[in-house]
Length: 283
Image 1 (tube, one colour):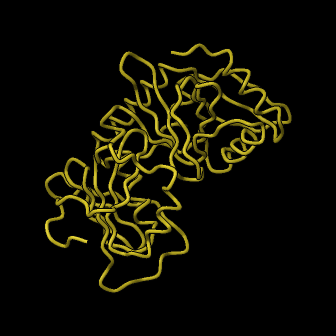
Image 2 (cartoon, rainbow, N blue to C red; image 1 turned 180 degrees about the vertical axis):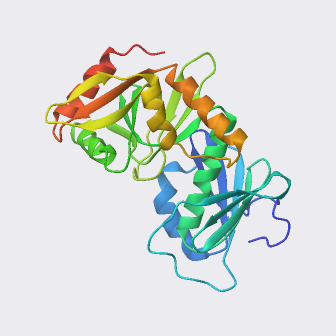
C-alpha cells in the first residue's frame, strides 16, 4: 500500500464496488481483509470500465486491537477545513472536504463497512437522495420501502416476501434518489442481502404495524416523515446537513404514495403488498 500521498491513485488490484451508481475503491493494508471484504461486497463489484468516484484507504493501527463484539453507530464530528471525522469503537477516519476520500485507521472489516455507509450517505445527499434503514420490496420494477423502529417487522416482512418468491432490495439499508425528469429510484446495499439486486422505481413509502389480518392503509406524509427521518442516515452533523435530510425526505414523500402496512406473520402480507404494487401507477 502507498504510505505517501494519500490522494494518489489506488494500488493495482484494489477492490472496487458500486452501490446505487456510486463507485468506491477500497485500498486496505491488512491483506487478511481481502477475503472477508469480498464476501460482503462480492455481488457489488464494479465493472472494469467504471471509474471510481471515491477512495477509502485503511491502515492498521500501530497497536492492533481485537474488533469489538458489539458494533456501535459511528460518531460524526466536523473537522478542520470542511473535513469530517468518523469515530467508532477501535477505529477512526477522516473524510475529505468533498467526501470522496477517506483515511481510516483500524482493523477488521467493520471500520470499512461503517465508513462506506457514511460516504454513501454523503454521495446520495449530493444527488438529493437518502440512505434509509428499512426494507425494500420489489415487484415488476416497482419498489415499496417500509421503515420502522427496531422490532417493527422489517426483517420479518423481508423474509415473508422472499418466501413468496419476491425480490428484496435490502432489509437494512436502502438507497433512494431522484431521477432526471421526475420520480425516484431505489437500490439495495450489501447489508443483509448477499446478492446483487437491480434498481427499481420507488412508488411507495410506508410504516409498519402488526395485526392478525394484513392490510394496506393510507397514511399521511407527515406521519410517515417522522418515522422516515428517524431511520435516515445523517451524512453531515450540521444544521445544513439536517436541513438537506429533511428537504430530501419531504420531496420523496410528495412524489410517492405514503401508507401503513399492517401485517400478519403469514403469506397474506406478501399478497397485500403485491396487490398494491400492481395497482400503483409508475411516477
